Image (spheres, rainbow, N blue to C red):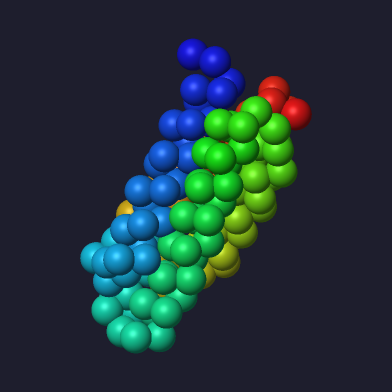
Length: 122
C-alpha cells in the first residue's frame, strides 16, 4: 500500500469519526468522555472537535487529489491527535475505563502514521 493510499484511509477514518462527533456527539463521544457527552456543554466540545477533524480530513483529501499540500494537512492532524491524546491522559481519572487505552491506540497510532505520511508525501 502506498503512502498516498494510507493517507486517504487515514483521512477517511478522520472524516467518519469527525462526522459522527458532529452529528451524534452524545453517542460518539460517550465512550471517550462518559456522561458529559450527554450534556450540552460536553456536546459543544464534541461538535467542535468533530468539525475540526472533518476540516482536516477534507483538506487532506483535496490536497491528495491535486497532488500538493498534503503534508501541511497531515501535520495539522498530527497536532490535533497529539492534543487529543495528551488531554485524555491528563483527564484519565475522570474518564470511562476503556477511554484511555482506546484513545491511546487510536490517537497515538494516528500520530505515528501521520508523522510517517507527512514525511513520505512532502
